[in-house]
Length: 369
Image (cartoon, rainbow, N blue to C red; front, top):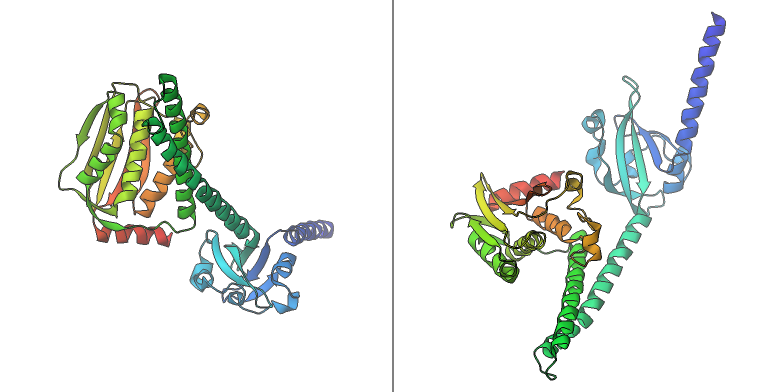
């Protein structure tokens, strides 16, 4: 019997040693705190991240080191199942502040239950992200000026201001102009993404008639519709209103319409519809194009994702348009999605708030998450 007890004690001790070794080797800081938020223990990475010795932490409140988001460490919050990762401002022992990501998880069992606070210093990640955004902005802005100049020069050449071109010259200029336009669209997309990511995309919200949004969007793609001889069907009530940034939603609709036309065969039907759904207005753009495979549906709104890689190789898109559409719609308090089947076409839909109150409710819910 004594041998069995000794064996059990040995296994427990070995298990405890493994846990200690694992905790000590963790690449992120780990605090164990009481229900009152007092620190009971810290792993070596905490010393590396915050400085000092073990004695500098024990008995202090976690809010001395995580100086905002105190709601994470209330007794009620600590008793719950834990939090998602939250970006916070942390403070070292010497007073230096830095960005960190924190996750709270329960540790142990009652009555000795503690809470594990995982802390990761993300200063380098933030710096890399800032440098990336600055680089993207610099490249995009520096490209726009010469591209604009090239576009103007090509327009003058095509119009005959520098002399008449023969037929081959006109075709060559047209191809070059199309390439410049595609590059300019890419630059504009990159600028939009940079503004969205940095929170600098300014919205000009107003009550806008759905009729005006649809008409202006269709005017922008009228030449494409005519070229493909598509059958256009429009369905909505004239008195529908949405509370939104008019120009940004027109940008979204033009993008969705352009995709629908691009991936449809000539003569096919294109439906543009809108209807009231409670305090929202639901828009739909229905095509009879090639459709989207089921395995691509979940990723279609991600950056640089295309249904076929060949589309990017042929210059038919950058894979940024739908990601921008998603960001714009969500910033306007709406949702976006697609229903599609290969060979049967696609329905891209998005919703927008029909009034100021609904916009405020939707954006409040989004900000709380």
